[in-house]
Image (tube, rainbow, N blue to C red):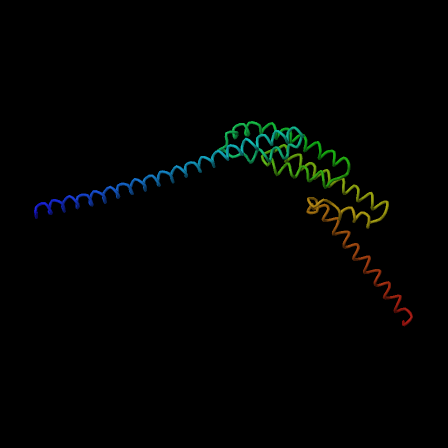
Length: 220
């Protein structure tokens, strides 16, 4: 009986140990599966992000084409510049950029010239200023912008001189005071404004002296 009980105890112990080991193996397998699922989820998220970038490139490329069809080459150029190198459309965007820049240059210079001829110097300067900002590498555009500033300055000075002859220095001063912001730092215009200001102060001083003398004349 003692031997039978001992044998039974050994069998029970073996069953318990085996169950614990099996449970541990099962838990390890579950943990491994959890890690695998987590890794797969991360890969899926990463793949989705990459796909989103590619899809965004496709969308931007189509949007560029829409802007081009309406002649809005400024927005077309801005849109192409947003396509990332990771996009499948990046190479196409780089290739198209050259033709869009050429079209934008023609439109900007023509619109600026039209505004200048209409006497709208602020608009003429702003159009080319925006173009230079979008295409800083264009030496031709930079030269055109410098020429425009010179032409606008000369036109304003001529207009101020004409107003001075027809209506007096106050009218001329109004012309110069309303000059585009890009021209108000010009040395010639600043010199005229300073001279006019000095003249104005001199006239006012003389008027005040005359008034003072008139008031004092009865006393004297």
